[in-house]
Image (cartoon, rainbow, N blue to C red; front, side, top):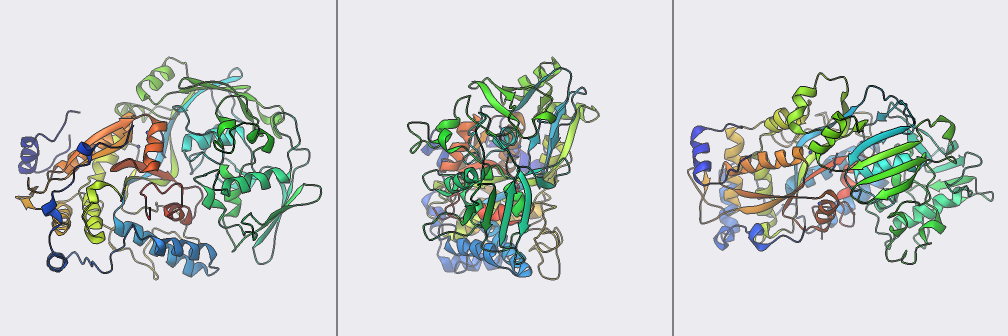
Length: 599
């Protein structure tokens, strides 16, 4: 159990708040008023002058006038546009730091730790590889027999490459679709369907020639026009792709379509950009850039109102190593080798059989019973015993596990922008990240105090999470926005921030006059629930009451996306090694804007 001072623990226990006793993987109804209760009316009645005086007295340096307002988000949207279009890479890096500063000032992103990943793989299996972005490639695996039995998650939310936004869905996409580029086992972006690439001197025009004789899984021709269709479909508002903004680097025609053309023989694509893009080949390896077959998509009677209908049952046409041939929803999926895949001669495994579950105890039992060859999760209480097991893998990832706040939650009603930001930042200071890393993660995760993770390139020849001559993080010593190590000083600062927001305290505990109560939304695997319980205890140390609602993965994803929550567990694995992909997701119109900025 975690340890606070004896007095603090006694106070928490006396209030009855403690209960008996995570990439983003393995989602209820709108939150009830009971779970959304916030401070009483008295909490927001202090004058701005009094609040400002109190903030200065506490050394908080909060300005009502200059507070970043997550409801008026146009300045952030404009900043992202400027980042995308500038050709001055030093200025671009400075603008990206400015964008992260804005995000962190809102307090709506509460980083917990920087990701790594664990999985188990039988010793008889080889040639499976994972990368920094969470993709797992099974198409070149080798094992005894011709079937690989796997678990990478529960029922997938979306299989349409334009609509998927989850890591497990991306893993299924890279094994069943192929794009112009892919990744090798060293995480290098390498040509896949591209035979040749020419880049103009100014870096703004790409001319890509396709491999000859490419085919869809039904044997029909695949050509450059299929990419043009798929990409314009992804940016169409009717498609409602969460990742439509990934094409914002591509120039537009007057009618809003992309400036992408095919040669007369449909074997060459010409792509015009709005600015040089050092990571464009990594975009070409991203699932939203994969082709989809127009006749397949539009063959469904309701395709215009239900754009993903074509990929909601087994049997749909793909162009990758495997096709989905059987799908018993919420139970299993079977993928079968695609003989028309352009590297089919390198694919030895004929069948991928997926167990669909997020019950890590059941998954671990199936693995130990030799019913699974590969699993992507293990129960938290088994990790210590597995650290020396040669079948247990810990791999690097580029991403951040964090908590997201719905800025429109009733929890913040009646608060000024500065007060609401102060509330959220206060919660971040209460968290004992070392406990979460050491006792729940247990595989060397690093406590996080920035949203952009350790190791992310800065797009200007350096590393983004570093102090340098051009930028120093607000907390210089910890290279971040605050000290991520739990301390009484952090708790004291959190209390001062909450007092600024109008809450009253008595002997270090919230007064009954101004309670704080909210619901935390998570999906129901043991690690995520354990983290929720740790946060519950961290917040309880000053009398904040947090209930936990754990729900199924697919439902969780959609509830979070729709903003049907107060506070939710979240995580983001980078899509490529440039900070823009973890900044542009928070623009007002982004489908990945779970915090509801600007909405």
